[in-house]
Image (cartoon, rainbow, N blue to C red; front, side):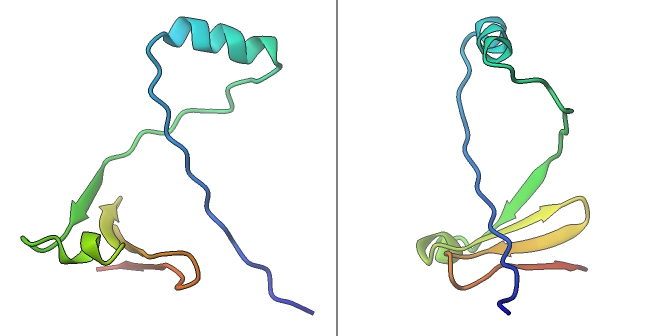
Length: 79
């Protein structure tokens, strides 16, 4: 049997009218399941070595995460 693979998909939207967006989502049956707020700190070299290599090193809630292109996997750890 094959091992399960976890895939993260992320999409960001700029909402200019939150009230209208909320009404539209309600019309199609969407409900709010919760709200989570967090702060990320992204790290790189002065010459943006990681960014140019399509990598992102971030710190969130005490955890460090290195995001890499699909297929290379991601790493999460604590320092």
